[in-house]
Length: 395
Image 1 (cartoon, rainbow, N blue to C red):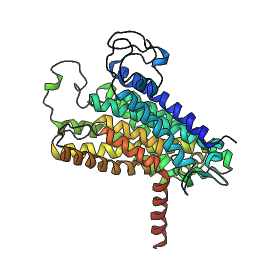
Image 2: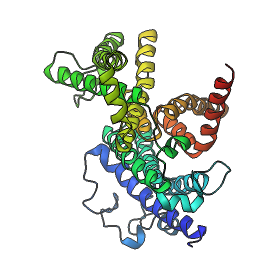
Image 3: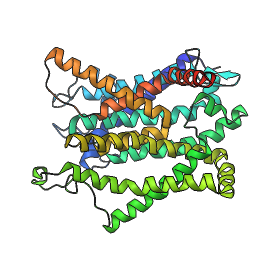
Image 4: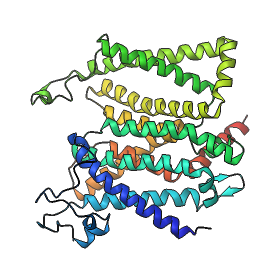
């Protein structure tokens, strides 16, 4: 049997390498540069960085945070991103597959055995989110933007991982419901599946109406390269009403789908059978998680803007939490949304104590909350189970 220390070493090295690549993403993606070419060069002397100077964590320490050729300082961001990625990868592995009474199990299998026999699907899907959210948070901190391509990549990972993971883990454990019991992937019912399908139809309609110009895009010049774009004095409440119009088809179609499910027996029976197919169940659960993740932030954005007359939260945050919902599911993404303000309050206390004045975007707080919910997944799972049990036994 492979010893635990070997897994830790491999995961640490893998996480550091991913962190090194994330530094490339952080620098190049907002500048619309290729992520694969040209090879990394020093921005000071423009010389190629040799492979032995590009070893994650160690090269920065050996070089003392300076270029070997021109002695230009290398930002501490590089080693911090590499270290944090490796640390999160290892922490997530240990807390969910090694330590704790409530760690992930596949019936009689637990720990490393559970990881080898299907738990790795759950792990890969979640570390994809961790890596991408680290990159998105650093970009957001530096430029106040969240690249939507990162959110879409995580969303796709959630859809794919939830779909194939249900089949793999279900076949390993002999019981696909084990995924729902341990909340290792988004889990749903036939009702949420039909709601997600209706919402998807509505989203397609909204996108078509937007492309045809029938409904208008909010903040149309927000991403313009025009120097005068930042001087536009938007009526923020009007812009939010445009977003409400965009969301109406999504809400209406989801409501119509629910009515059909409740009122038409044949339609209800079809969806109950179809939504119980393991692959379909995983996909629809992830899809519903995506919509719920988007909804909690978008509702806050709209209500906050209508109430205060200033733009509250950004659409990047909407896509970020939608991507999180596709991976961790609708229940946990809502928990993460309500955990995020505590990180914001901690930052505000730090600013007050040290008399700092720099404001930072909300995306990093959302990411930290998602990480917390993921790493302490079993704690939140047991809390939810306890609340549900108390509610059921109170009647």
